[in-house]
Image (cartoon, rainbow, N blue to C red):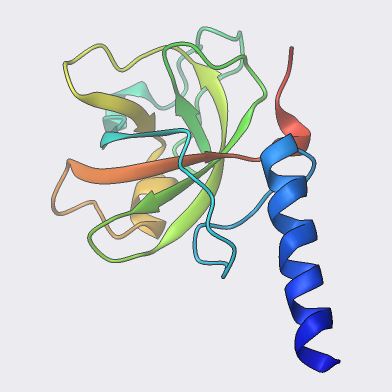
Amino acid sequence: MKHEKLYSIKALLLAMAALGCVAVKAQDSVSVKPYQTGLATYYSAKMHGRRMSSGKVYSKEGYTCAHRTLPFGTKVRVVNKKNGKSIVVEVHDRGPFAKGRVIDLSNSAAKALDMLGAGVVPVELYLVADSVKQ
């Protein structure tokens, strides 16, 4: 009975994730395909205080990012594939435009992912379901 209940819960979570009803962390036991994979970079210090494409002012302390196509306000879980660390950032800008790069992160977000030394790291992006704008 205990195992049947566990399998039912996993099946429900998988169905909800497939329908976009629930956000699932990359490290959760439920397997969810990433929205996108590629390379992440981060903003230079000289961007601090400048206006982003959304109209918001960039702060290196915030957990913000640039993505080419996701709507502003969308939250994205970013997982550093080298060390498994993950954070959630919000899209407020456009970019990056270099080949293979999928996201530019704020300085604080990059620090949380432990990527400041490397500069560019492979990542997986997962959409936080309740934040996706139409």
